[in-house]
Length: 440
Image (tube, rainbow, N blue to C red; front, side):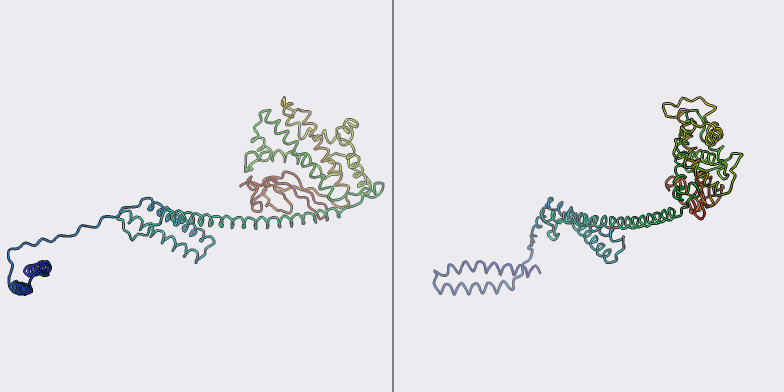
């Protein structure tokens, strides 16, 4: 092989110098040119047979091409654009799962994988720069990054709008249900107002209704809550242990909150004030005589007379009347055990003994009017309460704790702890009693 290479190299050298000789031949004699050609041909023939030995061949390799420089600004811009595109695809992938959309999930998955491949290409380019890596110009990268951010924000906005639409639909459904409940209540109140009776005899022009009786019961309950708050404040000022006091009223009840012991005191006040309600004399030894019609007229007249006079003024004008005896008896039974044994200065808090007495008279007047009105009806009026442990019934009972967060949720699966305020049956109409549900 070396011999062949040397022969070829020699031949090319002769040809190279032959070109120079041709330029000189232009000024020579033609005979001289022929002689030179013959000599060159003879030399070439001799060179074909000549073997070159002991020669050293040096092969010169070309230099490696220069390594391209990295455009860091373009690389970083492309990196941010690819990252933003992947984030947008991932957000779309998450949004496609709820509700689940197979086509959208597949498309978002393919887009996310393609952007990951692109990030991998940028990583390889950073380690080994190559002109084959498609880098975006700085402006193009910024445009692609902003477009990816817009796609991500659009996906989030669509998801939020979907949530808003769902909430609007839920609110519309609740409004519709509220309208239905209000319409039902309005219809019930209309039926309650139509279920009225007229007193006969001398007071035949006075008309009473079940709606009036329901309003009187609600007034009595509001007055009972007002007096209960005053008595509870009095007990705190006197240093009472409210938990022990509530346990003495209704023992063994598990309260949802410690503050719910106030319902035990409200029960104590309501049941005490309505005690004896089922008798015409309201606990007095002497009853009313005469036929039923005249008795009903007498109760109605007492109701009207009491409604037209302030109870405190009535007590001052007629201290020996039936209402005054009722107040004296109930005060000794309900209020005196709390305020009679302690000296408390609660004037600044509005809990002085005079203030408590005024609240008591207001409550006594409300309960008194409920009693007189009940016995003015031709329909039978019955008072009722629920014993502890009875199952909750939405027909006959009302949970006094109405908020589910305060322990009033799931009333249908709970048991009655105690009756807070009694209920009434007027013919076929029920005015619910208020109960506290045991947490156990």
